[in-house]
Image 1 (cartoon, rainbow, N blue to C red):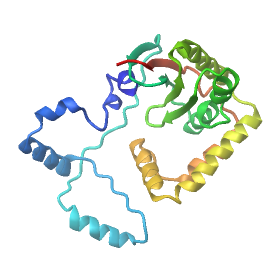
Image 2: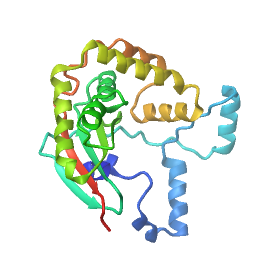
Image 3: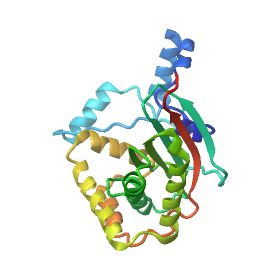
Image 4: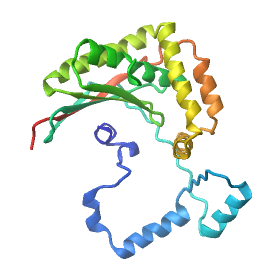
Length: 258
């Protein structure tokens, strides 16, 4: 869905690469690309553990002394004008369909967007789960995630393909409700508690901490768990955070295909 939604943007390029590109790879070409990476690429190195800064710098300088200063790359924060959603359908030999909806937002305050996503589909207490899964039994699972680099919210649901239109309508209804009316205090406080608990555990797991720091670097932000947690804690109103949000791309991986 992201590749289709952002096909004219660098964000739409799959980081794992593409199988069809392997045919053009040669030993010489691979080495030349590696050399350019060492001399021109942007290097971000993170070290976690019982090690001093001087020791870390010594290891880095001894192992990577060929690095040169790379060119700075600005985050791709472009946003297309609202337009009717694009629909894509593919088939797969699966027992259930997977529906993914790509929603573009106006990249409001990140803390507000984070809370909006948590309330929308971030947990089992979310609106999408309670309305679409529990109340109307239109899906097997449903959740949402926020790409902080692009202000894109992705909604994923396991469904029967016949329910796709109803699920899309229900998701749009919940987004419009959050955009216009925000959330009552009790719901907002629950979302805050969930996010703040997650922030507290990040530093307990080195891989999560490194992933988090890299995401901040890509987004052009300074590392500060404390500041982000405080921004979440001090947000009192999310109404308007999703103003202008719209479903850009709707992708259905349909069950039963070959």
